[in-house]
Image (cartoon, rainbow, N blue to C red; front, side, top):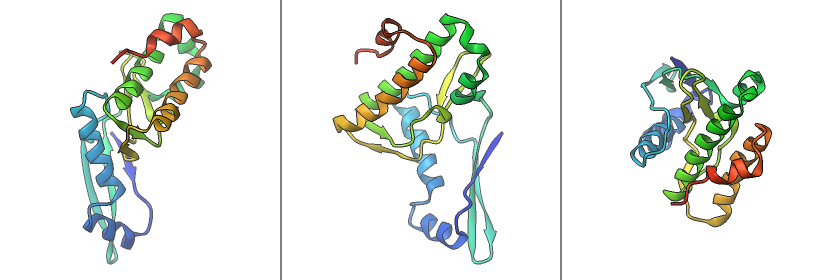
Amino acid sequence: FVIKRFEFSPIKQLLYACVGAHPAQWEQRWSRILREHGIDALPIASHGSQRVGVGIKRWLATREQGMSLWNWIDDGQHLCNRANRVAVTRRVANITAGLIHAGFFNRDLKTANFLVDPATGRVALIDVGATRRSRRRENAMRMLAKPTATARHNGASRPDRLPCLPAH
């Protein structure tokens, strides 16, 4: 398991939790919503809080499902196989296209928030608490810039990248 701890003020965490606005609550909510829309977001396996004085500290747990896309790229050994590069790029693009098609905007879409399982090739989105509903074109363009830059970095040519975005 991977544990994500929220380390800001315990009193603030308690107040945010009481009104349903704690980042852990957003993360859980959006993980569920995205999966309901067919977007491969890693589910939250467990969650909880710990009393700290008069406040709390929340935590979330997910099953470990591979390495971040950032580490996958940095590792370099996976990039030698062109088919592997294109397949992972396509999966990242499909997740991004799924977000846009469903009318969502993830303000924290970056290579560190995609997990790649080198054994299966599965790509899943993590850290989805910054997702919101939005059909604004500029938000879609901001999200599209990330997988395009990732594809370019992975060595995918323009003809490789174009079919990655499905027509919805």
